Length: 600
Image: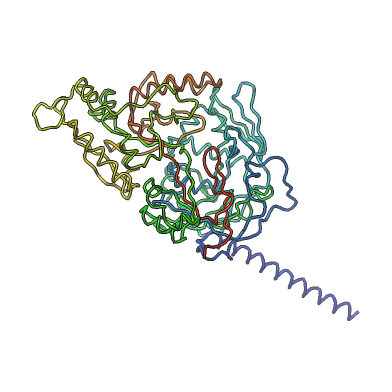
């Protein structure tokens, strides 16, 4: 009897000890998860989870986008470091319509489907495991994968740690609701959902997208959608407020996603750090990112970026044409320590004119401005022939571009005749043209730190001056330029757009997008072009789409809302220790890169 009581006492003590140990372990795990949401220095690779943790009993089934392009046995402990030229305005993917923010965010999220890297015309399952389309192409039924988890985070207001939770169809619908909210500053993105009627959640893992009419872009707008974590943007069940969403600077400097990487920290003007998401569902298909840490070093000057590349402080960067041509005949490159990769880019640069300003209101004047710029000379001298003169928004190699249509030539004499035809005269003999009592004087915004613009824009200023046009230059920071464009407080600018696989000029050239938040910030309006753009959106036949696109291209060519400058080549430099580098039709995919060893 005494022994039984003794045994019972021992069992009780052991049970209490086990409970205490379990509680301690849970606290340790929570502390580690919480620490994951803080900044992790680049040299502390031991702090990064090396093993992927899949949900209990989970088994991979079916296809997973681009899994076959990932290495089978990489080095899982390495750091991939690249460069940004400036701090992004924020990391909120909806209101930061800017390339660097999109690049960082895309590594932390999952869209419903992803384009095949080798065959970009084909969508493959990603967050969604399958989908179906109704015969009238108006209803898309999507089934999400189960056990995909939102990353843990510490709420920036309350300091409360929020553990991982499952991504559901409600999160996808929430993303659509946010995009469609008129108070949210995402008019550019909202334009792609103008014909979406509703989203119906069937259950936690199924939902339907109902479109008002047949829209060619409905497929990509549906499948390239990413969910948003309501519990992050609306903590404790708070009602969503669009204006607060825009101005919530603490949350907009964070990312809570469900993708390959998770946000670890942003040191302003220094770096943004991402760490591999140990709960990433893609690991089940061997599609987890090999690099444990992804670092974006923020280095303003191209010359400083280049020195950091030579020193091994960054592993990959885009070279300027001058660097590519004149500065790579050195041992680091000739020995193969750093390699170069060149391929056609998918974006174009342009000079944008504010059409609300009287001097840019007519097509004849804008066409004359284009013909005054010797783009061939700029391409040769400054871009070292690393690109192609642009004639419009469709890439020269695209089937949508008319090969019979050539860029406007450099022809200053014809340009002067066009200016005269448009009413420009030097009536007072001071060397500057005038019309209706207004001098042809305007200010071009120049981005601070852009070495290419520092050389290009003075050349353009001289080309214009020879024809009696006074172009002044004003240097502004990138963030200031974005605000000036948003408020339409500018006269001219030099920017670029990234191309699209399935062209839809609505966002950039349709007159409905001239409002404060639209991407048609130059204010271009043409009723015939509007009709063509709308017709293109509802056309599914490829041959007919090509015909409409070429008609659109011709209108834009004649109207010259921009001076289309160049389709520049992509010029990439990579440390030779970076492996699994493969060139796909639309460039390289750093998500699958890894390093074999640190450079000595």
